[in-house]
Length: 65
Image (cartoon, rainbow, N blue to C red):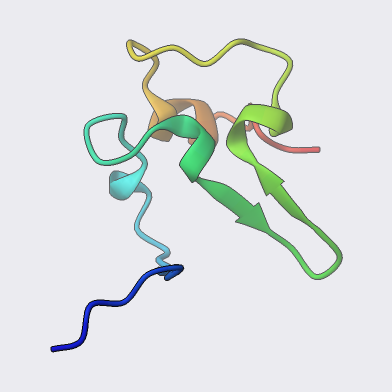
């Protein structure tokens, strides 16, 4: 296969179990609505750290705008 550079992969899921710091950093997750795309980091006033449970924060409404 030919080596590809400048590549981006976009995955979507309704499975909140995938919101994990073990899979990707919080700044790699995005919330997509009809009118905007927002990084999880920018969707909350709190500083997201490795120890935060992103799924629990999402389910509690922490990232609602």
